[in-house]
Image (tube, rainbow, N blue to C red; front, top):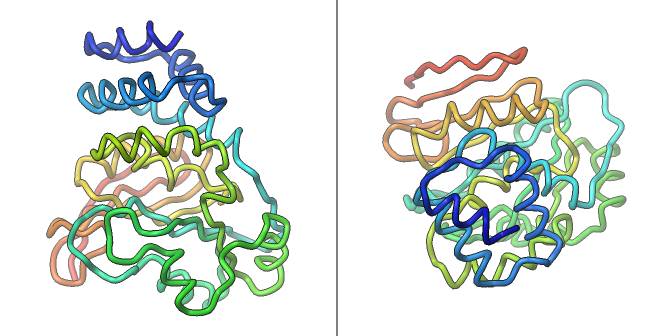
Length: 251
């Protein structure tokens, strides 16, 4: 099956939802070889990912994840972003999660160690003394008790082990760089998601809509930040009630 999908991507043709779903399921199940995974990711990167393809990839990753379902009043929010803007800023999304939780919004923070930045969310929290390797049920309890919890990606997405080697050996951005923020194990119904590229804001917001997220802000600082900028304009694609609206804001 992977051979046919790779051949289609090499020809520059988009995958159907079923093809995208089956391909990612094959990878997450450990049934694709490293060569097939590397070829798939490279061909997909060259072609460019569609909203439908990304949505199905994310669905499969959610199906394979260890999930939690914290009982909270009101909104459950994630502030996980893509990272990768290469501007060496501090970990803004994690700090903002504390601020928002302090204001009374329940936070299910999803994240990992640094890949391209100086400091990933897991690195920052660990430096602050937070126990980042709690099992899923403990994270669920913590969110219910204090209003914020951290889901360390390797513990919640064990099936990703099959793709780690090819990703590292390729050394290029792949679809997995944008899938992390789309695969919240707590199924958060709201999200603030920073992206490393301006052209991704509407695409990612549309994917979140397809995945059933109720309200989201997908942001990109036009100065290159994968965050809301404090020194220039920020492009925001806002998902609300199934509709996506794109606009800019300035400090």
